[in-house]
Structure formats: C-alpha cells, structure tokens
Amino acid sequence: MSLTPIQQVLELARWAPSGDNTQPWRFEILADDRAILHAHDTRAHCVYDFQGRASQLALGALIETLHIAASGLGYRAIVEKRSSPGGDQNHYAITLHPDPALEKSPLIETITRRSVQRRPMSMRNLSPTQKQALEQAAAPYSVCWMETRRQRLAMAGLLFRSAKIRLTAPEAYSVHRSIIAWRSRYSEDRVPDQAIGLDPLTLRLMEWVMQRWSRVLFFNKYLAGTLAPRIQLDWLPGLACAGHFALVAERPPRAVDDFVEAGRAVQRFWLTATQLGLQMQPEMTPLIFSWYHDSHEPFSQTGSVQQALPPIRAQLATIMGDLVPSHGVFMGRIGNGNPIRSRSLRLSLSRLAQGSDR
Image (cartoon, rainbow, N blue to C red; front, side, top):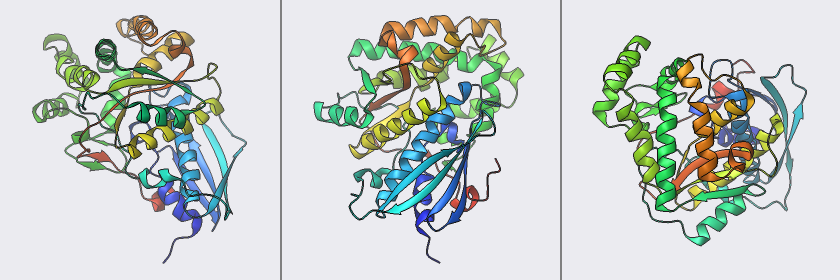
C-alpha cells in the first residue's frame, strides 16, 4: 500500500533530532494532505529541558524538516500554531499545498544521514567555504566560532568542568539512567550505549554503577568515578575537533516561538554540515547551566552542585563572549571524521501517528 503525501513527508520528518532521542511529538493524520502535530516538552522529568527550551528547539528542527521533506514531493508545507491547553504542550496544523514552482531542497538527502558524533574528530580546520555555507544556513542567527588550539583547550576545560555537574547531580542521574539503551548499537527511542563514546571497559563499569545512586555516590567519592567519563566524553572530544560554535540570536530568546525558530536554524545548520561531509555534536550543558543561573531557578537541590553553576556561566562568557550566555540558542562542536558506527534511530511513523498520547 503506497503512502499518502502527508505520510511520506512525516516519514522523513520523524528523523528530526531531539534531546536524548525523546521525540516529544505525535502526529494525528487527518487527510492525505493534512495532519495535526501534537508537541510536548519534557521539563517535568528532564532537568536539562529548562522551561521546555530543549524540546522547543527540537520542535523547530522537526518543523524545518517538514518543509524540506515536503519540497521533495512538490508541496509547500504550511505549519500553523494552534491554541495550547498548557505550558508544556503546543499543537500545529500541517497542510500540504502543491507548488510546481517550488524547488526541491538539496538538504532532503541528508535528513536520515544526520547524526551525532560523540567520538574524537579530526582537528583539521574548516575551510572558508564550509564556514560560509554553515553561516548562511544559520541565518538570521550569527555563528560564534572557537577554532584555535587555545580556544579548543579552553572549551575542553569548560566541558570537563560542566560534566562534573552532570555526573554528580541526583536530578541528572535519573535522566541518564532512563535514556541509555545498554548493550545496543541502535535504539528507536533512547541513546545506544555504543554511541556514547566510552571505551568498552569503562562502559561496562558505568552500566553496573548506574544501576543504583548509592553506587554512583561511592564511586564519585572514593574512586574518582567522574574522571574517566569526563576525560573520554568531554576533555578529549573537546580538543579533537575542528572547533566549537554557538548560534547567537539578535535579542535574548524568551518565548516558545523564539526557540522554535532557533530550532529551525539549528536543523539547517546541522543538515548543511552533513551535506559538507562534517560530523557534529551538541554541547548544550554550559548554556543550559547559564539559563538556570540567570533565571535563579535551581538546577539541583544539592548545594555543591548548585554552587558550581555561576563559575560555568562566567567561564562561558569569558571564552565565547558576553552575548552567548544570554543570546545563545545552541552550542556544539564540529569537524571532519569517520562515519558513526552506532546511532539513535526513530520510532516508526505508525507508532508516532497513534494520536497525541505521550
């Protein structure tokens, strides 16, 4: 049985990125050319989804992917926001309109190939042509580049420091425990452990330790339990790349629509990087910690963890400039490298199109 136009578009759009592969959306198909997008955020159970911003960025990436996918079928996608019953939910009407004059987006071929590379990359600099293409894709957001050896060293230090917060906060532990698919190369709804970037021995130890918070506390206190993961997941990758970047808005983003629009730019940037043969990894924790600090909302009930936020915010401003903590919408690292061997997949369209249930 052949797919309808809206099913074909959604079949590609479902590959949009989302934090920890949460896929916080469902599709309600109404007709061959119409559907309702039911989106929700994960702030209630994910401490990293500050005010729903991570989910809103993912929603923007999904909407951008809808437009790109529709162009491949000769349709213009019209996506209109509907009223929302709550702060953590948003609903959008999707309508496909035939447009013979519409050109097929060259990014359509990269939708299913775009992925996260958490392992070290080549330190070869990006070419001026590559940077120009990425900057054009991110417009109207400006791109702050950190490319020199000194800048990469500073960013590696910031990420290493931020990782300690991730690995010592009980609120973060519950998130990490739920999103990893152990002993897996692929996962439809989580992150497979083979894609995390740890060596096999550390990975098996981590699997055992993360079964209980008491084990995490013991290893962190007596056996320097955060050291190996921080070196392998943050320090070394922070050095081994062409550079780090931040997408920066003209004004401080605040509303849902601000982050949805930012997510559209992030997806254009990421798909363009894929088209150029580049690898990419988000690096959002310093920015998220800065958001918590500036809002005076607590990230953790643990005093030592909470006290570590101001230095992260200050260090981010020192390294990337004062505008990044307040105007930044996305951060990551980028470079040339080998293709990934393990990745997150996606839920099937049939599972995502069962209604608006979460």
